Image 1 (cartoon, rainbow, N blue to C red):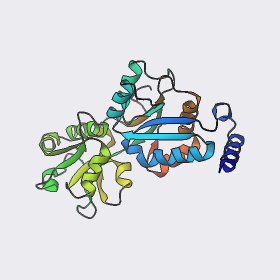
Image 2 (image 1 turned 90 degrees about the vertical axis):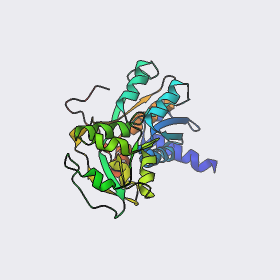
Image 3 (image 1 turned 180 degrees about the vertical axis):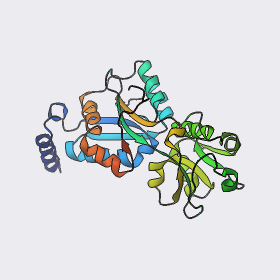
Length: 264
């Protein structure tokens, strides 16, 4: 089995000479990535490993949990966050390689329900949230800790729905946990990223929140202090055409600088 791996690695180096100086068989990269990236980042990591021979281990959780782990010395090489503030916190603490931060992706916020349970609705200030919830609760990532919950709170506040929603929240530890509550029918509604909804065949999108009802959902990525050449090569891959095709196929938008975006 060793020979096929050597052949694969050699072919990858010939096909991607820009990576050749930093690649070596047996190289390993540890990535901490937001839970909403589970399918797309797994696909990107597998494609990269097949192309280069580098082992890419990815740990998924809420961005806040991952950032705190890095603060406490967890051995991540690359951090991909669903929230610029948590990335900024690590940057301010001197825990990122200077100049390595890149804005990768954008996302949308969606109101979801179990499949075939609720029809389509326009998500705006006129949304009849009490009627849609009935006696149930609204699943969200915990707004005090989880980026998706932070965006959900901002959107509900913008639309004048927060006072109704806050007492009815089912607070989850990350956005995928909120999605599971909806998919299992444990709650009638949830607020997740549009890409999370697309990843499940057990939920329907009731409607998308207006893009201007919450801060832009941007996914920055960066190298953590002490990351090696293999990590730098993987981060470059994430900004390249092949990885972008993978992310777009999973419903993400490629980041394009827009007025009002904070610099990375």
